[in-house]
Amino acid sequence: MSIRQTIHRNLPLHIAVVAIIGALFWLSSAMIGADFARLIANVGRAGGLVSRMLSPNWDYLLAVLPALAETVQMALAGTTIGAAMALPVSFLATKTITGNHGVTIVVRSLLNLIRTIPEVLAAALLVALVGIGAFTGMLAIVVFTFGFISKLFYESIESIDEGTLEAMAAVGATRAQVAVHAVIPSLLPNIVSYTLYVLEINVRSSIVLGMVGAGGVGVPLQSAMALARYDRVVVIVLAVFVVVLIIDALSAWARRRLL
Image (cartoon, rainbow, N blue to C red; front, side):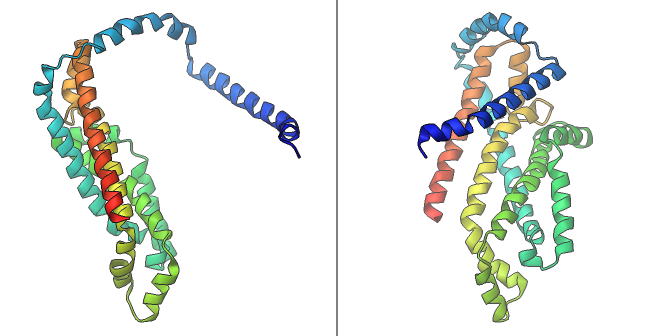
């Protein structure tokens, strides 16, 4: 069958899919009260905003560096603690290690519950409990990292060849020994890669956390936006962008060394 015949045969299906997507878009827009006419009418205002952002106030960089360092410290500490907590729990979330389907269901259900809590909501609740500051932001990052990276870890455990695990068990190795001597060495590249990936996410998300009182670079960012100082906003955004690039480069380097 030629390409033209294939396209002609599938054309009604393609048209139906496009029509369904279009209908869903229109229905969703109507339900949320989307005003595209207003959006188009205000496009011209974006020019002034962009022009102010194209003139960064580089003198402000020195003033924002302490807050940027605090953001990185929050993300590093929160990611490290969250990943360290997630690793042993991820073993309990897979039947391959526990051999108990009931335990696996309970642990996964708890992890799913933790993942449903938005990071900003966790930060707001912790601000009410602990107070404002970087420590609160770090705790919110721990909660997010624990819930998110646990899923990545236990899915990686389940992808390991069970033949190796069964061979160790056959010679008398306990489940703990199998986990330490077979699973963790096999997972090490994924552990490092996933942890650095989540660290990158946490550096970005810590900006929003700071805007609800959880410390970091989000505090000066909120102040700059409130004062319409977009020349400062762009400096903060670019500084965070550079940090994310550095983390991405470190992640690529670590993967090359471990794989």
